[in-house]
Amino acid sequence: MLRRLPGSAWLPTFQVLAVIGAAFLAPAAAQNTPGADKRGWRGGLPNGWRMLGDDEGPAPPTDAPPPPFDFGRDGQFLPPRGQSANPLSKNGQNGAAKQAAPDDQAAKAARVKARADQLKKALAPKPEPAILRQQALDELFKHLSAASDPDEAKGYAEAIKHIWMQSQSDTARLIMQRATQAAAAKNYPLSLSLLDRLVALEPDWAEAWNQRAAVKFLMQDSDGAMADIDMVMKLEPRHFGALMGMGVILQRAGLDKRALQVFNKALEIYPAQPSLKDSVEKLSLDVNGRDI
Image 1 (cartoon, rainbow, N blue to C red):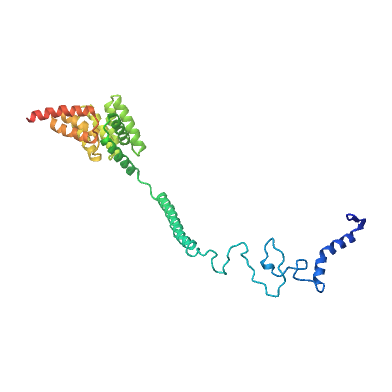
Image 2 (cartoon, one colour):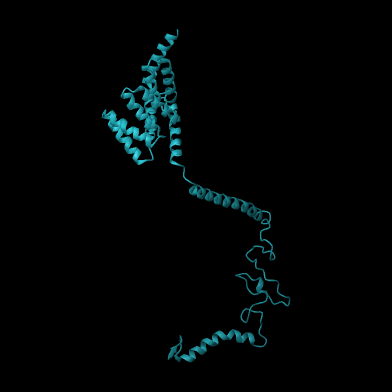
């Protein structure tokens, strides 16, 4: 193959390679030539090359040993190995690092503790339904006693009644539903029969006793109603409905003073009842007039 050099004729490839090799090897040959200055640029690194910057020329020849290489030519001071480059780092950065380390450890410990608490809470046994029910009732009764608006208080009272009507037994809930439907249809015997079965099935269910007391009252069985109300108050002393029923029975029996006491107790639990307040005021006048 032939190659053509600029301004020359075509040459064989091996001649072109020879020319290129001679151009690269010329400096080395000149450096090895006797009398050549090894301290110049062309044949090797100049003396003082350790101190050269990017734009400096070769240093003048000298027989003195070259100085130690300065790795800090950019203006930064590099101390001996094992020492910090920043004279303030020993008291500054190191101090900050030492201060940051405990903070990081405290934050990590706090995160670990938070995760442990979450895991403990997740694995903790869930409260029993009866406990949750009692907690909900306690909270509602607090709002009920503090409410001054009748409509607001009625909302709390209805929520309480709704909880009272609940049972964990599907069978008990079904019997309660049928008994209340029969009472609403004025089929009191059927309702009473169902409620008899219910209190036998769930003797600790206060509302079962209260519903049976109401049916007995409607059937003119005041003694039976009072006996069932007594059971209600033992199971749920805050049952304002049972208290009002007891007050009505006592008032019908001519026991106005005791009825007044029972009505006042109901008002302590459920104060925002305008109709009951009116009845208590009238009954109070009758009772006080008799005492005078």
